[in-house]
Length: 550
Image (cartoon, rainbow, N blue to C red; front, side, top):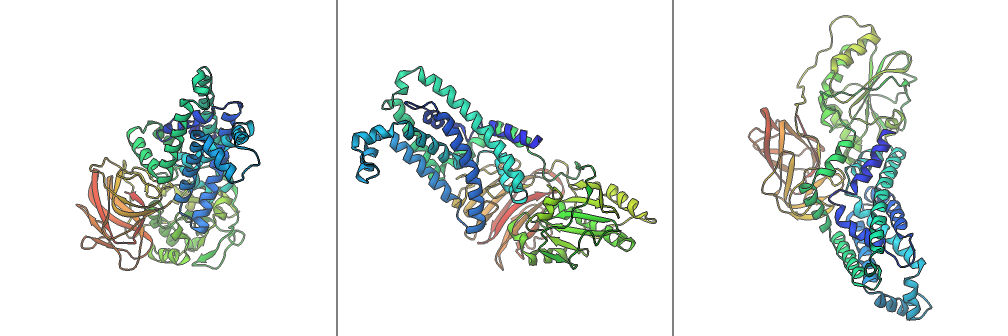
């Protein structure tokens, strides 16, 4: 319930965001009619329905039929331009419609029909519908819902998205009504053939061209960088998906542990059920193999399995993919081998078991007793001593505790946040042009503040990654912390050159050799830095998804 209210508030706040403010004249202007006072309500309704429909269409098209998201931006922009032209040149539009036999009426009757209540209704709905895709990139809440919640919990995501749309449309409606009241007092502004209506028409056309060409994203990027206050407030409303090592999260006992559902493959085991495991303690660990939080947790899971499996403990890793390449069984099998995991791993590619547990985090641990009841949970990193204490209590274990082996990575207080590079969740980007889906030639920003990154050269951008379009494409990032990691993939033989004062373990002779889709260790400083700038130069075809830090 709290997240529904926060989504509602975030929708209202998004109207005040820098990337929305330039469109408010279009909303107010489109709300002015010559006979119907329903236009503001119809525009708000069209916007709400359009944004929800656009979200589902965007996810379906990019996931299933690989339509470039820019196609929908072009279509939306073209619709806004057409609406502007009909307002600017109503006589020309009526004549064209007559020549095309769009109606059986004469030229004069067509012009009257375009100003009728029915014409206004259609125009108002189309105005709202055209602006839905435009507003889709203006909110961190919207990005969080479609990128994180929608793939795993579609029903929950639609509730959050609906609440967000209601908050946004309600606030826009208030703005529209207030603007209309002002205009109604000014007779010259209400004249459909007057100069004010023509100015509004020109605004429609300009906005439509900006949207169709992608220039609006550059304006938005500039506005968010220069006027970040509203977006920052909204960002702070979102839940922390991956609690850090010093901010662990817990929940109360959940009762009976749900069964494994929708598992597409098992690694290190034949298919298991919770019923089969009844009579022994079971630790369920939700993870995904490129997640740095999961990687830092892995040595402890391996140690507990080695120490307590012979005493009855079973661990089941439920792998729920964050990125598309993590859905491929061969990639997961390779990661399981590289991490030295010997316990059963279940591939939950459709998030069915994730939903059964109501889970929202990577990593997440659910400790189940011999009776099949969840008695302890923990989300995120940390609290490893407490986790082992809970395990030992269920086993009535005696003797020494478990000991980790090999490298154990740690969280650094104040480190840079996880930074996604695809358009769904990108943050901190600076440079020209703004970050939007499609292929672009970028010009790097001259200076970077902490937690900012920039691109130079040719790049292909999609919803969850960026891909170097040519050899020599560059990326710079200024981070805080001691270590830098980057999730990457690419063709055989591809490399990434790393310019840093302290290259990480995966850097050999200044370069990383791409050998699969995984997390690569790029930088390891002797101590935490308040601001270290790293420059990466990519081979053509190398894809980068997200930075993490330590």
